[in-house]
Length: 422
Image 1 (cartoon, one colour):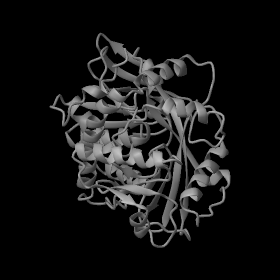
Image 2 (tube, rainbow, N blue to C red; image 1 turned 90 degrees about the vertical axis):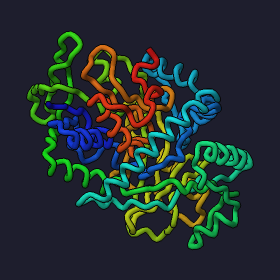
Image 3 (cartoon, rainbow, N blue to C red; image 1 turned 120 degrees about the horizontal axis):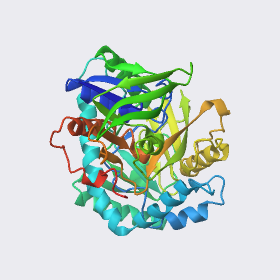
Image 4 (cartoon, rainbow, N blue to C red; image 1 turned 90 degrees about the horizontal axis):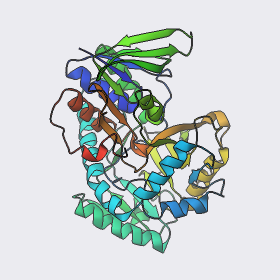
């Protein structure tokens, strides 16, 4: 039995990992060469602490204020685009207190499953992706941030993440004695871990190839052969040679990240989703040192020490099209935020070729789309993870395997229903 996975990011590769393990012949197609997608440039968080979805009360109002600031951390590019308008209306309707409450449990559950699976991967040969469980700091600078932190800690305890702690200014500074921190305090999520995403992706690809998974690069999906309620073939065009190809398959997994809406549309399925561009800068052998990865609450930026000698700064959420040129002011905004929280860090804006950017798949409610689609009984979708793709990657792959094989799911996946907005 053959399964074709469309998409070579962490979601597609994790799905390949579990499906190969359960006996499937696996082919992975990707429109690129598997070497530089959104799974490489993120801040490496594996974080059960991120149980708050992107669509939250207040984010719309804040986003409107930020729209006129070229360095702001959240930006929606205004344009006449029906997909954007439809997504935006659904996003606004989802940004409620009730949704915030209902999203927390499924986000926690899939994150905990994923974290356990990553830890299991480390027991396999050739897997050493600089995984560390030090925890994650969420540093705040304002009284409003302090109130947010108190409520977040209470919610974390309610969700069973009991090793979450609230730190005052002195306790925070004591964790980072080698550099000054400008913060009133922080949350310390001891449940969280981080890794070096580049290593994880490279080792996962190498492992899957050894297991016999076939990787076919530069294949852009342009259509499907459909018969009754089944998809029999995937049609592609090779972006290098221009040749048309087709791939017969018993099962299809759509894991095309921020391009998932377009892929699903080829099957007559509507998924409200927009690409949210993020940026990161990575320093090697940096003169600046931190012990803990941290989210900078008011700065909407993140910082992670990685793989012994590296430090990565990342952030911004720019709801835009795939064709819009990158905006370097966004990167300067990240570095300015880092400077506000870590005043000793003087990181100049690197040249354009040293800056990474990628497109996160942002669903209309901040929850991923994972499950079967209605029209075809052999198509599974796994996308829409927003900023949590790497964190939820292994757990999503496990759920995809359970769906494809008709097993009982490891958690309630109803909140991730693919066509929940239909």
